[in-house]
Length: 358
Image 1 (cartoon, rainbow, N blue to C red):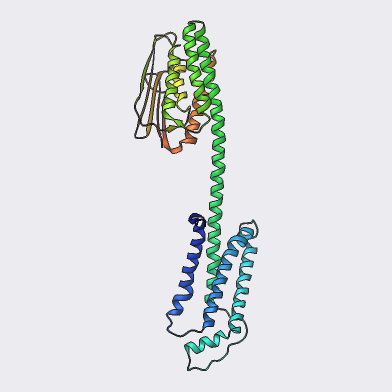
Image 2 (image 1 turned 180 degrees about the horizontal axis):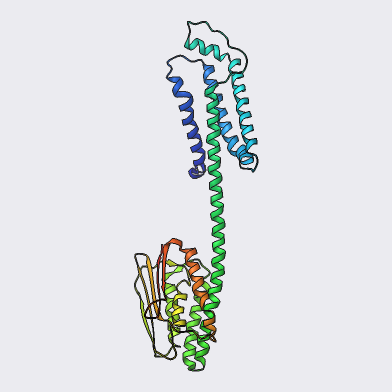
């Protein structure tokens, strides 16, 4: 025998429990407090009214509201059908009561010493029954509206997530060629200066290519791998720069590993070497990366050096940072803080980025 799937059956159990509770409140508690012996026909009538309420509820939730109320221009048809069903059900219930001779039986139960005078056989309005049916229509309409809102919200979130995933794939596809374009330019420059250093650079690049090929296909990667990638990149850049460039590197060595979006920090560090190095005067680059209480803190400082318009790297300067800012807003939304200061007396480009990694 298969075990019961409680999660699957939970909605059914909730519905049954709700109807049992409602039925006890509306049709059992009050009659039992009347302190009279009620005929069994009365309880049959109560059971029929309960079935009517259940039928009205699910008919309205699954048919009337979706097919009429939520359709443009059909609200009056919905109201007309609801009123028609209400009147028909009240008339049918009244005929059943007359067929069971319930009015006379109830009169004898409450007033046994008073002779019974039959009422007119015509239709008469039972306010309690009318309100109960209206209540069933009202609650079921509210339930259907909430279900539709939840369904629309779930669909909206799904479409938004698909849009974000598509956009992230597009942004990563832009970042990766942009990075390799700049790195290959670095190696090309080294081949005319020092072949051995160029070979070392190619070895570093091959390690970084493996990271890009395998890790950027994932939505997340380990922070330790991202930091190793950044170290390789900085080592590669330092092979190219002259002794005039002072590089201060402060990367936390010991930390509890966590996950991060791949290739997210590189553009800020790449920007330091691309725009903070001067061929004529001394320049300074400072890079600090720490992790504390799941808050990743990246700080970079570099001199602002006028770019050479004939330099291919300068022509593509805005792609990496612009895409990275977009990725930050899509992936981490309200979990990050980015401050960029390029208007200061020291003529430095300063980046202060904090990301809450969960």
